[in-house]
Amino acid sequence: MINIKENERLNTLNHSCAHLLAQAVKHLYPNAKFWVGPVIEEGFYYDIDLGDEVIREEDFVKIEKEMKKCAKDNKNIVRHELSKEEALNMFQDDPYKMDLISRMDESAMTISCYSQGDFTDLCRGPHVSSTKELKYFKLLKVSGAYWKGDAKNKMLQRIYGVCYDSEEELLEHLRFIEEAKLRDHRKIGKDLDIFMSHDLVGKGMPLWLPNGAFIRKQLENYIYEKERKMGYQHVYTPCVGTVDLYKTSGHWDHYQENMFPSMKVDDEEFVLRPMNCPHHMLVYGNALHSYRDLPIRIGEFATDFRYEASGAVKGLERVRCMCQNDAHLFVRPDQIGEEFKKVVSLILAVYQDFGIENYSFRLSLRDKEDKEKYFDDDKMWDEAEDKLRSVLNELGVEYYEAIGEAAFYGPKLDVEVQPAVGNEVTLSTCQLDFLLPRKFDLSYIDRDGSKQTPVVLHRAIFGTFDRFTAFIIEETKGVFPVWLAPVQVNIIPVNNEYHLEYANKVKEMMEKQDIRVELDDRNEKLGYKMRESQTRKIPYSIILGNQEREQEMISYRRHGKEDTTTVSISEFLEMIHNEIKLKND
Ligand code: TSB
Ligand code: ZN
Image 1 (tube, helix red, strand yellow):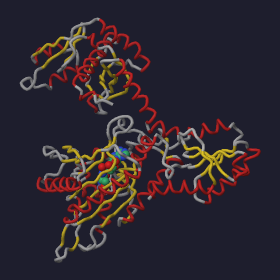
Image 2 (image 1 turned 120 degrees about the vertical axis):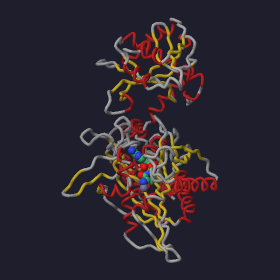
Image 3 (image 1 turned 45 degrees about the vertical axis):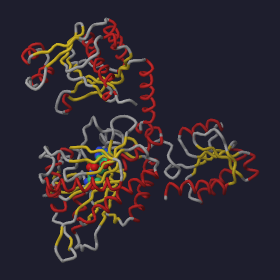
Image 4 (image 1 turned 180 degrees about the vertical axis):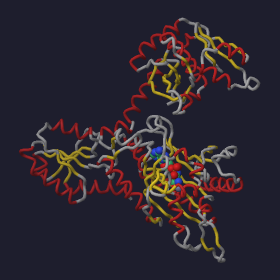
């Protein structure tokens, strides 16, 4: 879909449409006060304070009608430039605009406002020249948004919309949104009984249902085997730690806003852990190490808790309780390049197995100005950043650089993917760290007998099982590859009376060969059962009737296909085993 924010014409059009929305809302709700109305990738929104009144999606028809009326008025959209004093005067009854103006530096910028008929808004512009240019628009949704994004502030109402130059473009946009909604892992996750949530457990704390748990277990087995073959050693450590542990690591100073508050037990003060690095540092420090032992790769499927804003939590994609596919790799400085390369290769191999093709590598660097988030050691940062850059260049991997996205302990390589709905998210990550090993006073004995500090690579291939599962659900639209599908085969006898016995025999043979199979022996029509098999997105449906029974054959239909193929049971088993093996190698 086109990025509206980055398209000059569409940006202007959507910006003007946000003003049109505000004008219409002001007509219908005279007490409305307006905060900001920016253009975003998918259109625009406006944050509005309506006092005690609430706008619901049902109200959109009425608002859109008013917008059309204002647009038809064919009013010129006129720019006025103001001094700060004039601006303060003009908007003196509007606390939101007063807040904006009072923070404006008159010498650094021109303060301007735009008027169309009876409506004037503080704005930098630019705008279309007349309201009549605003013809093809649609309001899309409304949600709550805290003023300035701070949960301590008042909740405003955010109305989203989009505007185009033609009806076809608008319809295309709306079609895309509808399709994305169908792919949304929250919808599919519910339809296929993958996960649920409950207020009594809490926001951002999904519960994995048997189907989801099965998929997750497959993912765990898959990556565990890959890591084990690469020399990783897996551990189990508690999902809490003392505040002192996180003070030692620096998380307490640099990451506290993402942590749940601490709790006291006897004379200890604990936090739910947001990361596993401190525990793994202690595991490394538990034994003496020689330069010959390195790299030491400590892996864990580790549960973490993070405070995510309530408006940001989303299905399995952004949760407050998550399980990382985590590992910390302790290496000598001369091993950084080699080990980093292995991690990138593993990421690429895993993506290939899952058929993930649309992703981008982001090299996340520090913001040199942000001395609060990032520890102050320019030499160490420069060295670490250069190291990652040079390995990526050497590998010939395409990437872009992002300032201010680094972890507080070091620069990282993040793999970004696009969910069906909403902004890009990070899936895999590999982070270079010279800091934590020092904080925990870790060492190894070098060839010459001297004590040296190891370097750590933090890496998570799936990121978290939560986010990866969300992503895979959307990638596959819920039609999982056979090796991941909780139920691989659904056997449907044409008529229970005549074919059930044979169906049971086929089921038994499949189970003996480790195929996850169900037999639908309900007294329902064949067509009904076939449709349900499709809705449940089971990869193979097997239909057994007279012909199949007499010839000891089976007829199968692949999910989404119309045709049926008849083969012997052994042929089918060979085929399905090959399919499973290919993805699970
Ligand atoms: C890789 N200490 C490192 C670790 O050793 C770490 O915690 N890195 S992280 O903060 O980037 O998190 C690892 C991965 O977890 C991210 O790449 C992302 O894929 C996933 N993740 C982060 N926050 C959430 C969340 N709220 N919900 C689901 N997954 C998340
Ligand atoms: Zn870590």
